[in-house]
Length: 82
Image (cartoon, rainbow, N blue to C red; front, side, top):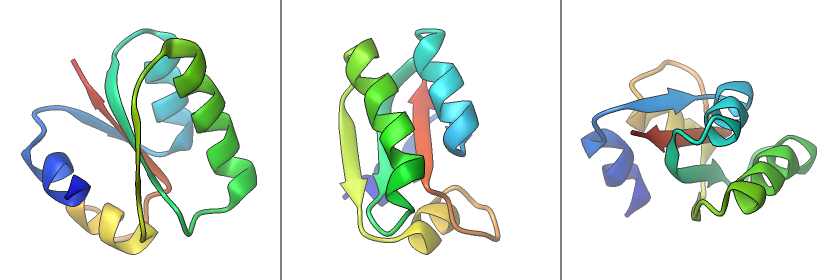
């Protein structure tokens, strides 16, 4: 499951702004987004990932994604970076 991918990843960036930045800079290898996040927020990430031709994986929970990133709050988007 993708939560394990995040836990095992060497480097990640957490949050919508940082994920979009990593995509635009060509640093993102894969993006994970939470399905329960606000669609208007996730749409920006999805569009940037499509433009960068980076695979996107969806997970069910912002809370669990945040926990996998070792933060105390939910995360809408995470990028695994080079």
